[in-house]
Length: 343
Image (cartoon, rainbow, N blue to C red):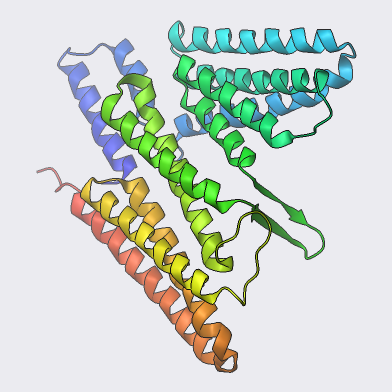
């Protein structure tokens, strides 16, 4: 059953409960917006608008405050007050007014302000080392502590993004060859970090209750993403640590990591199917397809470039077949859960 149909069925049940005088109209008006039946999910729009607004406002504050306020002490005090104010406001809106999404967005603003405070203090007491990865790692740790104190998954995601950068990954636009690039200088760190994050996801889902149990989803996203990206880099360049990587003279290493990557993606598919983890199935299927095409172009297409037309036919045909298979699977799943029409 699609989400809209399910929400319509729930809405019908709510009105029936009002007719039976189990619910009041006031309770109906409070519950009905949680199950939108229109084409647009307004609750989802509220969430994304508040998140985007929080990110923009936080970035604006980080840029504006140092320009407007010249005194370093005033900057530090202002960022400290902003951190405390946003956190207090977010908790107040969430717990006293029932505005969970807006409250979570304000808590995220508090996390941004906390990172700004850490950076400002680091600049003030800098010894000239310019070791920015350690600074970003410190921000990740501070935001992580704040996430657990608040029980905020958004703040935890902010901390994980900082950790992703601190380990040695970056993306930017390279004007030299006119495209965006993704760089991962130390993939071994990400393999280890991915395994640890997956373990934390399992531990949170298994042993914690309440809002912090929801952290398992953020950890699983982070773990599967960085683990697969690191194995993708190894499958492309062979084993390397730092920026010392080549391509042609590491065939055996690239082949071994392609096989290891396939094992990891197959394990994610198996785990997702066994424990009904849609997230794990999605990552497993997506990166298994990428792994297959990476292997194909490295070890089949590269040595036989003169057969480019055959490779185009095989690649195009397999993509079309994959699209048809996915559409049929999704359509079959939707038909299987649609309830029979009411008599």
